[in-house]
Image (cartoon, rainbow, N blue to C red):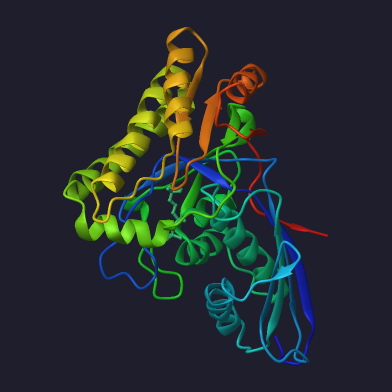
Length: 335
Ligand code: DP6
């Protein structure tokens, strides 16, 4: 591409929720390589929309997040974009206009949808013609979980599949496990707090790698958890996936809790909801929980149970609102 063109593209991407968690980066990685495999579901109703405008008339990159200029998040996004500008052989500044229809940085995976949308829009605007696997690798280098939002339904990052490639791609990428209509699970997100979390995932997982005594046990178990979870997804075995997914979630939080300083992402309302969900499941409602690096509770329900679970979640004290989602599509361009 020549450096005097105005190029624009808009993409949409959805957050994903890991059922088998990613927490920890490979030692000395320069490409944000994860230390563990992971498996996730991509949602539909929650979305990031991003328009990129590259214009030689601009002096610098600029970021507008939810309609307001944001200088704090600009450096990470600018340097991510520069990797793609370098692939295109240009240095043209870019105005990034992005919005989330859900709280940013509060444990709802806004970095996953944000960076997935950024890669897909930049690939188009800069005429890079990258394969999905290459886009997923670039998204992973920006934010590990973003690699999985390239795909809809169920997707995974399975470390033993990695093929070494030089920077900027690096090794690990996400790949599809099954499309959304294979098993249309429903998800109820119980919002406990709309505030940005105090310690983000990136810093939190580095802290765990450096200080948690459970770290090596954690990294040893995830490939097997992903293989097992994938088989349970293929077999649509809700009860066994519920047990395995809660195990992965609690294992990740045990690791985080045993870090120094401790990472305690739950609030009292998170814990109450976890107990309630386990009680509902014991009483026969097919639902399980997962929690990420924030206090929000995510209730994963078998098809047809979203309404009932949303109703029950909203009756718990401490749950401010409930967002109902189904499984959605991967990141894609918008006209
Ligand atoms: C708890 O993908 O946000 O949501 O690679 O440092 O950007 P970086 O981390 P990020 O971590 C996500 C952590 C998690 C679990 C998961 O999504 O697998």
